Length: 438
Image 1: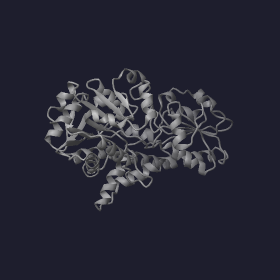
Image 2 (image 1 turned 45 degrees about the horizontal axis):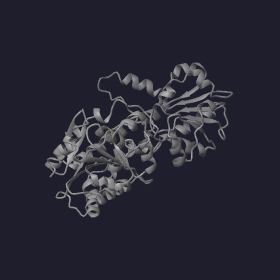
Image 3 (image 1 turned 90 degrees about the vertical axis):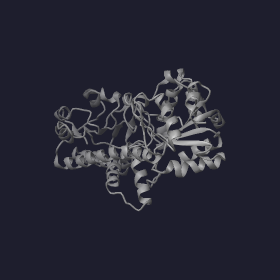
Image 4 (image 1 turned 135 degrees about the vertical axis):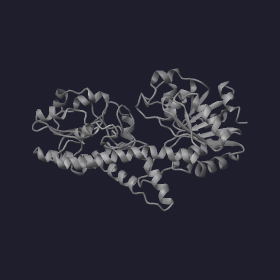
């Protein structure tokens, strides 16, 4: 039943479905559609309309690719019944108390379960703690479909490594971890992914191993960045430039090149909590992972505090100071504002009686308004500022000249916080700026 599913997909006798068409799911759907028939399903009917009209709100593949793709975009869940190979790529966020929010993956499992047919293979891509695919998703699929896992349908897990906004590390160029509930399912899942992943696949020995691998990839990165952030705090107290220290240390062949910064987004700032949550369930309280998280979660507040300190040092009144923030997305060259840590800077500045103006030419303005109640201003209107925080390394900001930045300030000392270290420190200090960076 399953061994010839790969051939049927190739021969377009069967279809593949993608459940969840965000920054991760949509590029996967478009990639597969170059080889086989694909149904692209999302709950969000407005998003589906954009895709149908050839518009890519994520900027991941671009409008031209969306116009050209043969993906059958739909918000009608019954269309999923036409597919035999299903990929679930919905987000897995955390709640305010940092516990995993499995609602999206549970909801997707219910929708898919209602429309699951015999002989199907279901692959989850969402980041989860080890055990979720088998202990949470399978029971939902069985309950909703009335089918038996292992008999009527098979299950697998293949974590996504797509890096939003990154045009180099794409689905096709990153080796893909695949896993299945048994050798038969693993074989068909590996073959299907090999259709689009030129870099090849790594066959994990079990679903739990694949789930664990994904969750530690981002935890490792999180801890390394937390170490850099802690160094930044220490070196700032010492009056030493962290970037210069890292450049010097980076000349050693085995020094890992990480940099301090705000850790937002849906992976690095979230995945470690999935791992520590499961560890807590088993009676182990994480020490290294959670201490790294604490440091990274506090960096927005730290930036705001340093803005205030620099305003005071520049003899500027803090309350109602005019502050501009350049950039609001969680990372550069990406419109996504969800899980951005820039909001922490905004909220902390408000505690001091400062309401900053924010400009971001790349960001999804509607999303920022809906999620945070923030209205962006046009960059050309940023004038008479007491302080400017250059927060995100958008390409559109890297081309800013000193005269562009000069024009943003009013009278008195110019307070500039260059979070990503994009500018030449010596040049700005020589020009009389109060310059600060992580």
